[in-house]
Length: 408
Image (cartoon, rainbow, N blue to C red; front, side, top):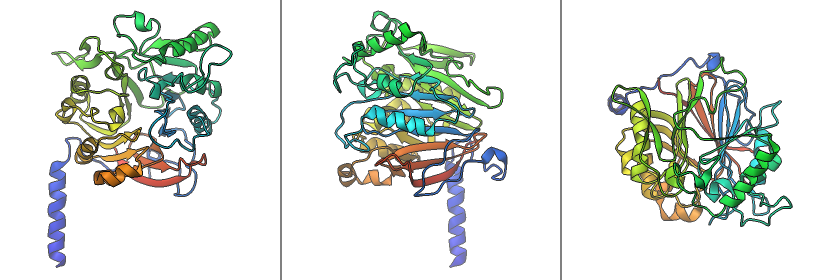
């Protein structure tokens, strides 16, 4: 009996190895300094970031997207700060505004000695990413403090990067923003211009310096490359050289989403906002095919809804160990099943009980209903995924997954 089991296990291992992507797993020296992460325990608060680690925090208010990054040298970046009303229960409760959830979370985990965010970036101009002017009344300074502008009241940022500055809808190269919250956002940007305390710029596809490390850039092999936005995508020419290609000005905000590739040692991560539709995803999938086919973590486009994983991506031949989603309760079960079967471990910030009851595939997700944190060990050789309690602001750990070993 034991012999049969050993043979079966050996066969399973061989078959599994045959199915591995071309970049094989390797297990680094667990005793080396480049593998250290702070000790963590279920039921206890997540330990603070330590230098050398890369943190990616999906802050869950259940009212929009907000992702907080702490790069290995302490450089900080916030991508999106949505504030709207969704068909799911607000977290931790309806009495706490979304911007307050974001601001308090950022302050709690901000590296010691840092007061301001180094970078604030918007993936695109939709209210679940930037804030809605219908949330509350305008303040004395003439605009509604919501989303990004309200977060700024709590945590200042030194740089603001979006897909439209400085001309916005007047610029034919990017198309017109398709949200009625845009005039309110423009008033906020005008305030920043007048104060001259924040550097404002447009997201530049092809740049690897726009989100540079600011404190110890020579000590860490960490780089953010802008790969897609405004209908442009970073690809390769016939000689294999990097080139920015265009599919023309796109209609609507989602297809124009700005996205980037974050690389830290062997760890690779891609986030592309709400990039949707086969045509636009196909443009982005050219980047995946040209530059990296096997990711450690991929932030699922458009909350993993029905149009988030187009045919172009499905045929691109790339996979990811972990797929995360700032889910708004509308994740598509067929999309989630496709991703799980790649195979990828799926983590979602919100997964309502009615969805779990209706679609058994959702129960195959590795983690859900909480703040999701990806913590990459110093050097990028391995990473963990934590699910944090979002019912209060204690940031206690509900689940720990890992270590995942970065592809070589």
